[in-house]
Each structure stands twice: as C-alpha cells, then as structure tokens.
Image 1 (cartoon, rainbow, N blue to C red):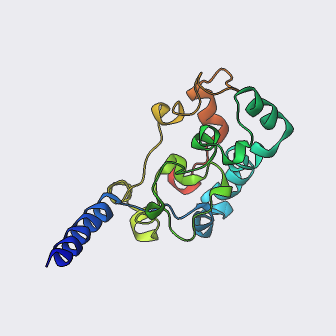
Image 2 (cartoon, rainbow, N blue to C red):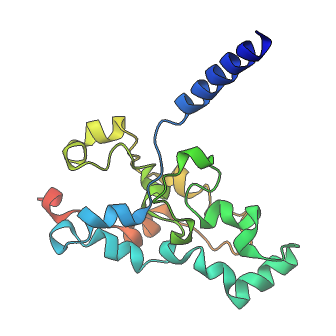
Length: 176
C-alpha cells in the first residue's frame, strides 16, 4: 500500500514537472528547413555566418582559454560560467531539449526566438499571434543584455540598436 502511494505521488510529481516544460528546444537545424531560401531572406545562412553560431566553438580558442584561466576556468567549453551565454538553453532542463537539439550550435535561433517545438509548423509561423502563443519570442534589448553585459569577461560596449542591424534577418515577403 505504501509503495502504491509512493508510486502515485511520484507519478503526480512527474506529471507536474512535465507540465512546466511548455515548449522544447529543437535546434537551429530544424529552422533551416524553411529559413534558408533567398525568398525568405536566407535567414539561416545569415545566422551561420554570425558570431552567434560560433559562440560554442570559440570557447576552445586560445583567447577563450586564456580568459578562462584568469577566471579559474580550466575548460570554457564545459564551464557553466561560460556556457550560460555561449549555448542556447544551457539552463533549461534536459526534458526541454528535443533529441534534435545540439548545444554545439552555439547561440542558435531559439536563444533569441524561444523554444521552437510548438511554433515551427508553417501554419503557425504564418500567424505571428499564434506563433507567439506557441512560444515564439520577439527579441528585445532586455533579452540581449542578459549576456551582452558587463558581467562578461570580454564585454565590449553594447548598443542594441546597432547590434540589431548587424544580426537583422527580415523575411523580404513580410517587408512589402
């Protein structure tokens, strides 16, 4: 009987935890399917050519290792202190990351636009209100300064207005 109650309790707690995970991170590779064409503004290509896509990879550079040593970090690619800003969804629980999610993508699409499992469908993406209800985030300055701030050991002056222009990737069809 006690074992049954324990199992019931664990089942309820497990269900409650599952409900907290609203959307899963699926990885930027999933975004590529629809966002790579010139007609869509080559948004995926724009990301792959950006420093964001190389944010994880850069952590093995000589500079990153030197910065890490000054902070007492042996390996920046395994340090929570570094990964929190160099990897999408680093702080998210494992259940919030789909099998397709790959942290080596660095700061991927979902770092700025939210976990995409529920808004990635074309039908939903065509309706911004529905996409937002399904987890899409329209990035703002507050989101960016979560990492681009003085706490970063390599911080450089950050202007949201200027940075937004550098990473802009509008859909030409929506600009008309």
